[in-house]
Length: 159
Ligand code: DLZ
Image (cartoon, rainbow, N blue to C red; front, side, top):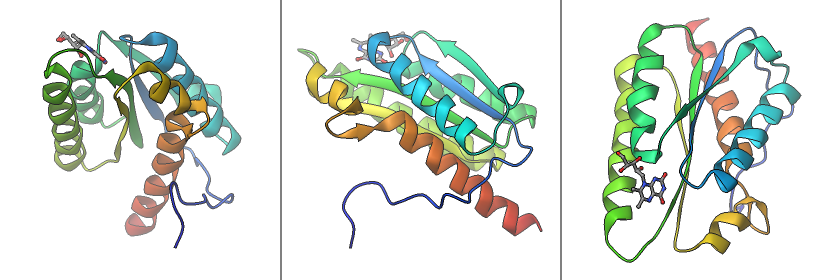
């Protein structure tokens, strides 16, 4: 049994679907790395630049709000949410993390498209850097790969 992200099937193709990427600007030194990894991954799997639209929100708490609006349009095969919530001195992060996770799941369920949880939930900056292309992977790449896989599965159900 593997540990961590499963290997992606290289044959997975973006097809002709459009992908929305929603990026939280809070902790932008991290989240912009997540964005760049997600965009590159979609391109590597055949998405052209005009199939990828990037949107920004102030912080992770706002990710599900815009994801819901975007999913509602019916214009996208998937929405990829990217953020970095880093623990501070209070319990604030817990409220954000739970709200974001639930909000993203609700958007996916309500609108019938994959909405990806590419949100780092870290105890400190180092943990976040390590997961934004450092020692412990890249959450933006993982979220884009998961989106490609889910779009492919949804597509097979529609065929
Ligand atoms: C307020 C706040 C704090 C303290 N920390 C983070 C964080 O680590 N990561 C993040 O994405 N956003 C943070 N925010 C901002 C909230 O997500 C939200 O934007 C504000 O509370 C306004 O609704």
